[in-house]
Image (cartoon, rainbow, N blue to C red; front, side, top):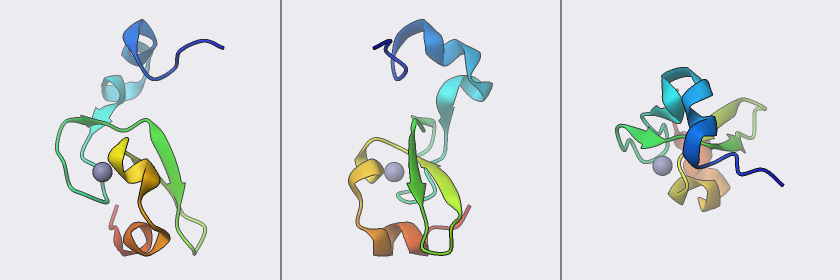
Length: 62
Ligand SMILES: [Zn+2]
């Protein structure tokens, strides 16, 4: 499987895969993981928050 979370592939993603994590508000962090809120909204979150509990994800604002 190709690496999609490191290296040159990131350069093809808008803003190179970086942004502010909606869950932990870290800035300029790589947002490479998807989390889905209970209401069905999907968010891009950082690596730390890919393992966050659902209640933290639901509280996040985009
Ligand atoms: Zn985060």
